[in-house]
Image 1 (cartoon, one colour):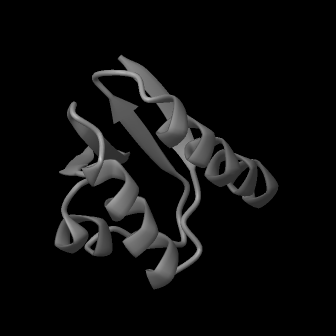
Image 2 (tube, rainbow, N blue to C red):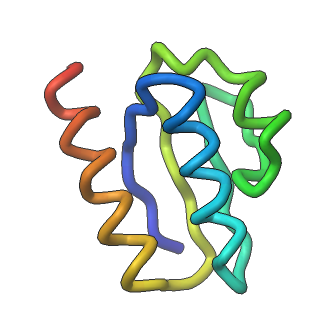
Image 3 (tube, rainbow, N blue to C red):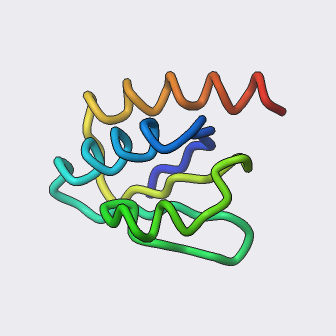
Length: 80
């Protein structure tokens, strides 16, 4: 399993995140504290507090998605 922290800055970021996660052929989860949701669900992602730093857990690897996550990870580091 691969994990990385990310920061989504709003609704547009959430939409783009779900779109890119949906392109992965493996499970992608988005977590905050003990809450774990399917990252391919826009309703699930929108139910989280997007002001917080979130953790992405992936059960596979995808170079393009990981490159996108690296940008969101930089935002999480700046917010911390």
